[in-house]
Length: 172
Image (tube, rainbow, N blue to C red; front, side, top):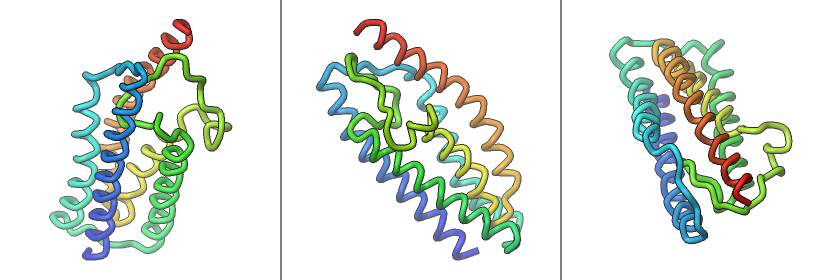
């Protein structure tokens, strides 16, 4: 359980690093006329992601979930792969990446990196991590709860992001 707690703590530190990058990138975008969309769904998104990390720890410690190697090791590989995909997205989008939906009018869509194959690869990373991270230590209630709530939130987020990009392309 200690190793899993360290893993979740490392993911929390990674999330804080994301927020620092996002803050810097938001300033960059806003300075270039960027417009933020979907502010209302952002606080629930932050709460859900915070709940994921808390749920992982609470379920494992309180419910005494065991580490089952046959499940845990493959889920760890998936969780780490999701981190790699997330940072590939961040690197590909550069200063345009953000945890918020901020679109700078006139900039073309990014078509490199993982965006060559997927329209929203970062959301794939989020979905995989939200399922795999809890299952590293068989926290199945957290994995199921996050997956269901994230699918609802992601539907809203995707509509918001697609609408924002469409509006900006139409204005250009």
